[in-house]
Image (cartoon, rainbow, N blue to C red; front, side, top):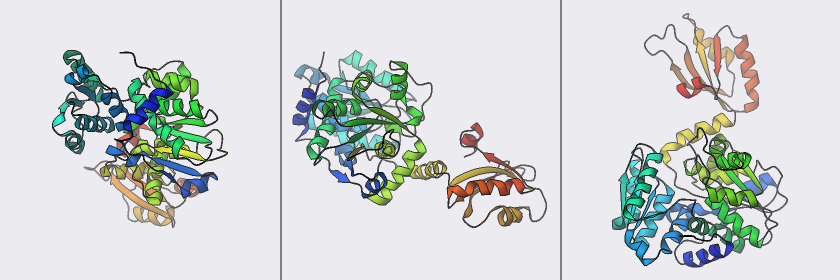
Length: 415
């Protein structure tokens, strides 16, 4: 079935979704407005049905199926927001659906999908990775005739997600200089830029993707989508190893800039959103506002950042804080070999460290022989500019001290 992707399709999707999804607010961020020197507003898709924009694309696709297609049901592979969006659509439209999940999907996510879908959705565990679950879902579609609901690379999905751009244009009072959109598979970016450039070609549209999964930037540099050799999965809602074909084609023609955001910067922005705006954003939801500080050209007028989702697991906040502190240069790790003589540790605390430098981690590497092995020591600073002075004092110390660099294999093994 050939389906057109166009501004008109996005308008039709907006009409279809108006009575189903929430018209999420466009809120001013005083914090970001102060930092950038221009008004910054946040499109709060974390307040959407199922706490993510993904429901827009899933519902638009499924609600447009013909009667014969509905009888065979729908299928997808997802452990996150797309699965919840599909479950919601299936329940509302009373269409049977199956969601394939990898075996490592947390229990709470399985329960959430089952709770949203009720009797209309069957979660199925298939394989130990997302790729295996995805293969199983596509095999199901071929075997049963069920419609495969792609999370980002289907024109109907993109049209539904593009209604975010339609709403931004309707809600914003006055001209917009820049709209920043998070990028995973590229569906949201494609839909938003397609609508905005059709009606407001002067608006700069920027895509923000995680630096550890920068598949859009790689595709644009290569001249075609390609699979990344490795992906940092921390920003799980946008950790896509190969950008979608649709997203790539639209972005190549219409998107003004792609920003790769370090995962640590995403974590810092998650914390700022929570502490200042009271927004609980998932990592992908903080991509756009984190990217606002990294633009090639400083904005000359109002900026809109899409907060794409708020399905965050509280158990991850320890890692969020750790990554943020590392990125900000406030936490560092060292291997310190203490000689077996009285006062060695006291010397380190009294002579190497000063006020504002605290030991936040201390663990002997060789747990069964502490007398010969070094200790892993984590130190937190009040000010990142104090780091060089700390290194000087360490160099002058008689202790054997080796910094554990965040980029080294040893760092990932120890911390």
